Image 1 (cartoon, rainbow, N blue to C red):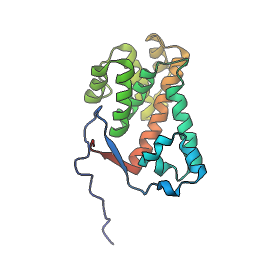
Image 2 (tube, rainbow, N blue to C red):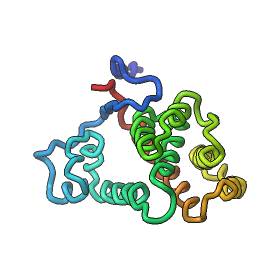
Image 3 (cartoon, rainbow, N blue to C red):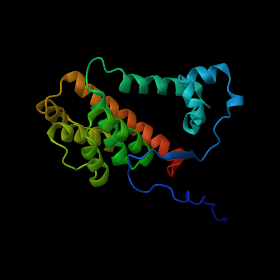
Length: 200
């Protein structure tokens, strides 16, 4: 029986939740720009993603990447109706904090802070965890997001009732569910194929 070779952790890799702009490195080889076909480029949707090892790795399956990216953009950027962008980002941050995805939590907490102007409350979520008191509306969003993230069967009518009591409409509740569910999946993917890097 041979010993498994275990890669050492990245030196100085972040080990606390932060709103700082940190990096991420894959454990698998991303595509190089020279390897991209027109289909790969189409699937990336946004040319800026050529600079992301994460998206260049996911580009190995362009059909799935394109579906993933269009879903992501619709959940977080299509805010004409439903939940404000800040609270969509709060749902993603809560899921990421619960799952232990330091990189995703850093990205979405920055967006939540930017759009809400409640930087201290967002930082409290990162520092204290998903039971931090952020006021009832945000507490209800976090609780629903965490229940759904733990396992879908933990999310129930009591979470919907609490969200309604906190003033959310049915469309807004739908957005909480979509934001948390998508990032629960995205966290688990990211955690299985790479790790965060120190800030540049």
